[in-house]
Length: 494
Ligand code: OOG
Ligand code: NI
Image (cartoon, rainbow, N blue to C red):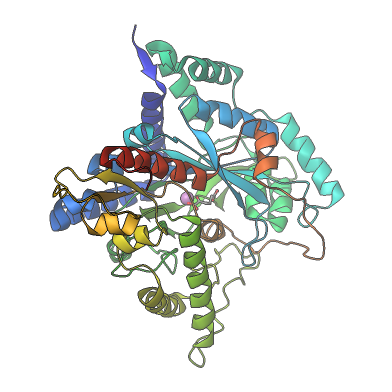
């Protein structure tokens, strides 16, 4: 019997999860449909250039998911399930300190890390873990009850974990066991119909809607599933035309004539879904919760630490300038004033506020970018701000001159060709904005207290696996290509 490799398990899991989520959240199907229309249009318009950042096959199947768990133990189990599908923890995100929408979680993303595996299927899952020990959010009494609740639940059946362990050790599973693994894995992320204890859920919700979504129920579920689109501005327009209310802005770098970098994301607001509730008097009723929603993203070139610094700096300056240029009367559109009324907080831009402000901020950002950000792939490469793989050009000049030294010269003289490396990770600032579009209230956080420190090292300990540094992964890939190109060109190094 043939073995189903980890890569095939991953692709099948992503496909089945997508089918399940489409049944659970019909608006997701619309989003996928519109994304595919947009992608085909871009392909028609731009031809092969459309595939510069990934083949159309890859992009069409490409999704990221988001899940949330409660304890290090649960996170270790998740790591094992994703490990079975060749996904490793990459990157550390701390969403507890974001000014506009602090959430009591720390996060990483599980994803494939080698070029081949990414090309085969890049499925990634943004995974957050609750931090009940953070006194800014939870007092000692609530923490104790929350931890007891989490300790008593079981998210994943032992059989699933066993199969996962086997797949990870053996590099895959025989067909029948693969089928069983996939079925159990998808089921584990379905929305449960078990009644939710309303009083307990609401108590947590007062602290944070995300805390309630994680610790207020006895199971976990996929929070959203995000397709990739090649023209996110076009998608935003088309969704709005179909009557779907999107958040106010597209998050991330602005649309501009230069190269696409990192990640741009947008979403529609959390939808009210029927959920079974148990009332304090024991009666079982049907209520509704707004937790899950739809998100879409466009991916660009991965930035080096220098590039990222410039990007973050420009975005911060754009925020600042946009605030300074608010026209009279348009400023106080009360972003984070949700209260506990059940209507979602506008989550468009992390600074809150409405579409007018988002547009103004975008214009300011675009202007800054046009003045200061590398305007072409060549400049990104030459200024060492973007990650590329470099290749010796086949029909390079062979007129007997020794190759000129230096990356920029080799590119300009036609000796080297640069292929962009796609950004495979997330952005903390956009993630905070995405969490915010989930929140039905502001939550509470006591900033007079100090939070429990968390970093990549501590998260690695909690997971029991090394959390990889995304910059190091891109860097290593770039470096390998440079060494190979240098060898081909007969240079000691580039
Ligand atoms: C995760 C939010 C982050 C993204 O795309 O940045 C995220 C969540 O809501 O659980 O998915
Ligand atoms: Ni997301």
